[in-house]
Image (cartoon, rainbow, N blue to C red; front, side, top):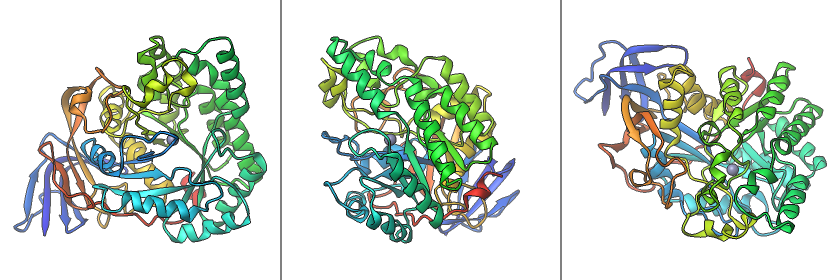
Length: 462
Ligand SMILES: [Zn+2]
C-alpha cells in the first residue's frame, strides 16, 4: 500500500526541499518532485512542514518513586503522538534491592506490552555495580538496550569508583553512559539546613540544588569519562550555564561528551517558585533556574554543545501527590509532564522565533537522539529506507497551551497559558497515521519495541 505526502516543505538531514514523499508499507520509498502515488492515498501537505517524527529519549512513564507517576505507557505514548513524537525511550525505574538489570527489563516489558501507540525503547538504569551487573550489560545490548543511566543522587546514587567501571565497560561494548548530575552531599546538606530553619516552601527547592551543585557533578563526570579512555558520556537535563560551558570545553578537548536539555529550562524560570502553592507544580530536578541560564542553553544548542532536547516527562497530579510537598518541599515528588508539548514549544521558541533553522530543529528533536541512542538511520531522518515516522507541522497555527487540550493523564501542565506558533497536525509511525484529524487512529499496542544497536561514538563528534 502506497501513500504520498504531496507538496510539503520536507526537512531532510542537510537541506529543506519543496516536494513529495512516497511511503511504501512501513518505510520511505522516495523523496523528490512530482512523485506518483500509483493509486495509493494522497496526503496534501501544502503549507505544512514535513519533519522526522519527534524522538523523546527521556521519559519516566509509570515510574514508582514511592508514589506512582500518573502517565503509563498508554496515556504517555498517546500524549507523545498527539505532540508529534513517534518514538520514546523510557527509563526503567528502580526495582527491589539487589535486583539485576533483566529483572527491571522484564518489569518494563510488562508495563509496555500491548500499551504503546508509538515505537519505544528502554534505557537500563543501574542500582548497584558488581561484576555480574557489568557482565550483564553485554546481554542487555543484545536485547536492544544500548544506553544505561546512573544517578549521582537519590537512593541508588553511584560512587566515583563504580561510575568508572561503568564508563569503561560501556565504552568497550559500544554503549553509552547517561548520567543525572547533581552533588548529593550538597543537596542533603542544604535541604536539612533549610528544613531545620523552617524554610520549607517551594522557593527553597531551587536554593537547595544550586547551579554549582549540578556543575560540580558534570565536571567530575567529564573527568571520570576522560580517565576511562574518553568513554562516551551523555549528560541528561542540563539546566545551568556552568554545565553548558563545561561540556563545550570537554568537546573542544576531544572528549566524547554529549548534552541534553529540556523545554522547561528554556521557557520556565525560578520565579515560578515564588507562589508557595503553584510552586509545587515546578518541583523537578535539576530545578528551574534564573532567566540568564536560558540564553546560555540556547547558545549551547546553537553551537552544538547540546545535541538533544528531551523532556524528563514524569507526571504527578498537582491536586494529588504533589500536595505531599504542601508543608515541606522535600516531600514533594520530583517531576513534571512535557512529552506532548515538547515539539510545539521547541518549534515555536526555536523555529518561529528565528533561533533555529528547520534542520537544526529536526536535529535536536529527532536525528541526534536517534544517532546517540542507536536507532539511526531507521529512525530520526527522512530518507529512503528509513521508517516512515513523520510529523506534519502547521507552522502558522497559533495555540495557547492549556491542560484541557492535552492528552497527558495529569491534572496540570507547567506550560499553562504559554502561546506557541506551530502545531503538529498529523503524526505517522511506520507509515500509519497514529494521530490525524485530532483523533487517535491506532489501537493500543501498535507501537513496537526498538532493538537499539551499538554506536561508534567518536564518529558522532565529527
Ligand atoms: Zn529523568
